[in-house]
Structures are given as structure tokens and as C-alpha cells.
Length: 151
Image (tube, rainbow, N blue to C red):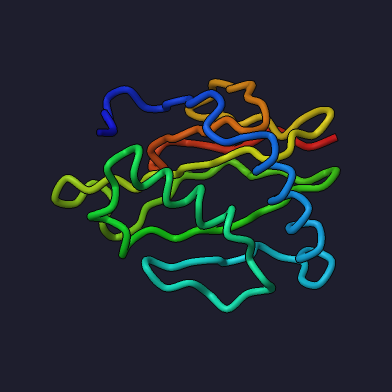
């Protein structure tokens, strides 16, 4: 069970090096075809998208099972995003209509599958989190978050 008061949560070795490599290999191919964030899954519905490998869904399912989120599956989306040199997640917060409503929390659950040589460090509430490939970071998306610039 996910304890919200302990967020942000860092989960070391959430997935294997092999899973990371397979996702990166596929993302490199897919980004060669399409240059934007790739929407993979909304709730229980998979998007028909460039031969998404099972390893992507396997890791999404693992998140739901390990943190007891199955009952929220219909509200979970899966995206694959890539930042090249000069890219970053700009500082922002999420304020969806349900954020804080009736006890709901908008979680951001990020799995790092490839780490740039410099930059791309997740920042939540002005604290930097140096993480490596295969590490999961979970935080409340209503908190101020970003990454530094990939160099």
C-alpha cells in the first residue's frame, strides 16, 4: 500500500537493466517515427501504437500491483517521454479537477530507463533526486516539479 505521507518515494531497482534496455531500444525506434510524447495506455485501454513491447505494460502492471493501485486502473495513463540535449521538464504543478477533491491525489510515477550523462535530474519541491536507470520515483503531481536541463 502506498503511504502518501511518505512521498516522494524512491524505489531502487524497480526494474531490470534488460527491461530498461528493451524500452530504450523501442523508444529510440518509435521516436524516429514520431517526435512527441507517446501516449501508450489510458486506463484499461491500450493505445494502438507502434508495436509497444510487453515490457512497457509489464512494468505498468508491476506498479499497480506493488502499490495496490489496481482499483484505480481505469484512471491511470501510461506515457513514454524522452528528453534530448537541451530538453527538460519545465517547473509546474498539476491541478486537475479532482486534485485534492474527496481525498484524491494526482500521482506522478516515473521510471527512469536511460540516464543522460548530465542533467535530467528530477526535482520535487526544489529538492533534487539523483536516480539511476531502473529506479522509480513517485510523488504528488500537485507539488512543484521539474527536471534540470539535459546536457
